Image: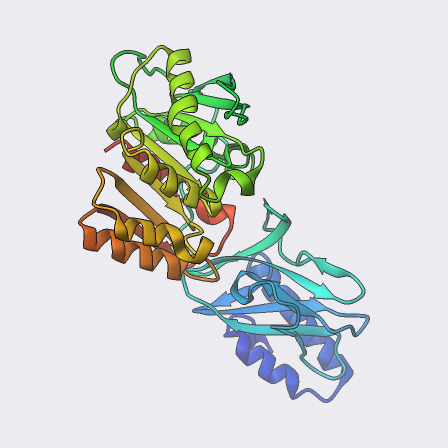
Length: 374
């Protein structure tokens, strides 16, 4: 058995299945537990294959739900390795550079995190365990900044209503990079779903680290804008687009006593926020000259935003479009990319083996800030 410890996990499973004696079954269970410990937790990944393990004492049907199967119950059911064992497993082929979230599910317990996986992250709909395949590159700057890293200045601003047709009042958080001189025209990045971008996406930590470790990065003021009525505001609402372009921008720049220009302003969002950003720039290209759309909901209203850009003459807007390739916004992003390229727009396009979640989006924040500063 010693030669199996460092060999492929598939060899262990094959030898495990052939065992006839309970003592040997127990020994193989311990061998698998040792391999999980050696790997730093479950799943064990080898090449483009992930092996999930779970000790199922109750003999419930256990399935693995996650990004790759659209969180569909029963899509990936774990199998008992040996009739005399309580260890179940699932073998799953995944892109070698993937980063994906998942949970286990049984009828009795509902969904729960993988108890053998120490890696978990708070996401939009709860805390999930996640896996990274061998080719995944860990994003920079998401760690809590070291003590030596200077922090940016945070200011809170209540955006006031300006008339009967403006009911979009809310408080925004403004990040000013450490040492930034507030003179001349300033660059701005307006980030929607701003509260979650801070708390879940850790955008402020990314900014502090980025400006410390890459000091020549162009300094950009980042405005974090939370939703109030997310669906009502983000789904191509022309009144909210106007509020972004007029009320929000004017009050922020007046508060900071700086000026800007369309080519220096970027509007950014993910999912429906990406749709909002793309729509606001379409409606007000003289205000927003740059759009960063992550996993954007270009599908909305039978792809109305894609049709709008198809029919509209080319506008002075640059685009950064990013999506995951696994149950994300890949199809719509491809369609929008094709339309923009045919029109001659300046488009930076990025796709990775990830899904529709904050870990995907936050991993690209540093890149977006660099892009916005060009």
